[in-house]
Length: 504
Image (cartoon, rainbow, N blue to C red; front, side, top):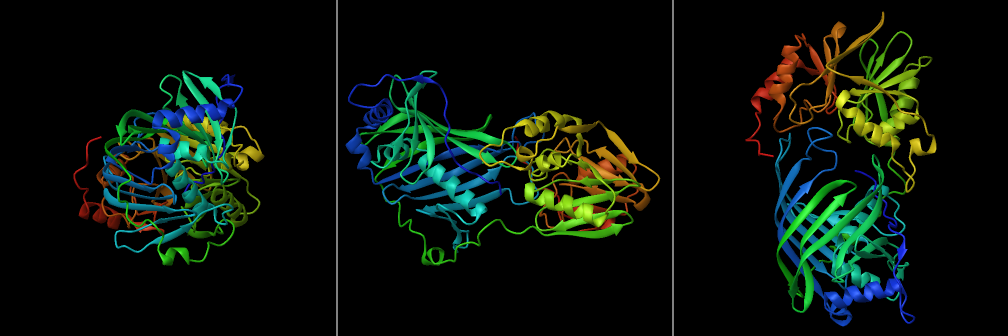
């Protein structure tokens, strides 16, 4: 899970002129409250129920880094908010509109109760994740902070938070026909509220977050198509952008004011659950020999493969995050002491497989990747990470890249590894697989995992192997638990064909 750390976003420089009686920032908030229905009416709101259908996209998760992002259709969407108690429940059905190896239809029930964020699985048992300030467990802190951001990213909630006597407001400024004010909530959360200069209605709420791969990014939720519900203006279109990617669009079919949202309190099992252990979870890396000069770098998280050449080492895959990749690099150097680790191969552009890319750059490794991934990862390597500095921010190094077209051979008198582009992959069309002729061993990422329930791109994987005339004996998946006999891989793929693929 990505770390998310929310902090202040400041945009624009021109000051809004305030009256002598009211500071400019306070005036912007007061005007927004009046436009929404009046301060007293806004503060009297007890509950909100938002229903509709949505489209959801991942950031950098499509078939190509420069192409459309994967689309998920969200139906039966319902967000119930207990405004005063700061509780929220979101239920939705998500249907993937792209090929996937696991379930393509899922039902979610996501909850927030003050400083507790938790999910209710379909079976009904609540899985706890504590939040608050400070948070001992970073992953759970990220979940809680994200959910709090979702809670606050509604015009009624955001303006109420800004109206609170304990809130702090920054100086107002104007930008592109909007009035902006930075809001620090009573519990220390920081966001920017933008108000339309003409209508005075809230136009957006913006947060700054720290993302493992993209660094300092803005997440902006915008509001449009306001309607009057019981004397309060509520938006019927809600759109979220994550950095430059549009990631969410909700078309509201029904807004309900002060309706019955049910009991949104966390169950006792969640309230009494012990808090998570302090600090990030430990990273375990194992080095299992699978052939002469080849190790499977397993343990916690996603896996990598280490190749030993006559005078250097090469790593296949830098997944997870900084901590995982740095631990893998340390283990690789300890496994074969005396030989420098010089290269790291990035299989493809999906961030679960490249979450440690910047960490590898910070260690001075040459990054090997398919040519169409170069532009994306040059951008990743150059992004500022000031909110939550990572290894590359702390130890800057220039990016060294070796691009691969259709094929690249890495060879000396002890090892030969041939990198091939996996053509026509509907999951990731910029993917590389690694072939070791001596051992008839194929190393791959996101082509096969025995745990998958279907193989939408499995036949294409087999076709690539056959077209390359590779006499494969075994494969070593990055996903999975080690070596798999090729004949069993083929049989598994053919026994679990994909369900009908949705159109993009």
